[in-house]
Image (cartoon, rainbow, N blue to C red; front, side, top):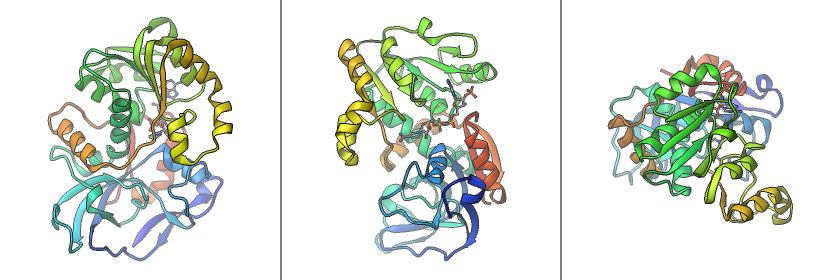
Length: 328
Ligand SMILES: NC(=O)c1ccc[n+]([C@@H]2O[C@H](COP(=O)([O-])OP(=O)(O)OC[C@H]3O[C@@H](n4cnc5c(N)ncnc54)[C@H](OP(=O)(O)O)[C@@H]3O)[C@@H](O)[C@H]2O)c1
């Protein structure tokens, strides 16, 4: 089968290539999915740069891609919840969805929302699980005031909609061109970072969701209330996350020093969220989509043959929602 593989580190154009590889076989708990669409995430760029490894023993060549939607074409003998012919979607934490087929454990897949086509469905798993897990880490509740930075990004555009569905008051930041469509996602106050300084507009927030990193992570403490929560997707690992990652605590203490000082001043909390595959949570997303509480936001759909162009487009960092690769 055809697959897009990671073959080296460096320039993206030299790091990936089309390969002809063996079609995967399934074990007893897996299903084989014929892939109709997949989507590109900044995480994929970090993998290509060597800044992130999907697993400890990550070796090249490796088939790229985390998000997938498609049809089940074979099921292992222990698979009970799914049948051949089911339309499914998921975030595949082991990577390998930029291909014609992928084998995934039945525990990690969900039925595709009935009201979405395959391209739309493939745009959702990684970003919607990230958004949901970040909002849950922040214990977002009805009436909370939250600032979601980069509301026009893959994660931000879904986080806004989930936070609104949960009854929060949502502030978000984006640039001038995106203000109107981001407002239409339901954000209560869209702050145009080209013309406004969010730090003079928001204060006493319950939560800040930070997908941008330095200086936004530290500055988040200036706009939260006493006891507020800063949830980052890209900042330094908090102590608990660092322990789980087996990271060097002394190095991290230094990196976190300014954050720690701010936390103490505001009696606040800080967490780095690292997304996990979770089919139950993806089922929750499916329900929100089918209830029309959230909708996918797609910037552009590229044919499979143009996957490199899709990567380069995401690398620019200016995408409006998600970039999708159409296989079928
Ligand atoms: N920890 C995890 O598990 C996890 C999971 C998912 C993602 N992430 C990370 O989170 C980050 C965001 O992911 P994503 O998929 O949302 O990225 P993305 O879709 O590539 O984000 C692009 C968007 O960011 C906006 N943006 C850039 N600079 C901005 C600024 N200074 N203020 C406000 N908006 C700004 C851009 O809007 P403008 O063009 O208007 O500037 C654009 O719409 C990435 O670094 C990703 O790797 C981490």
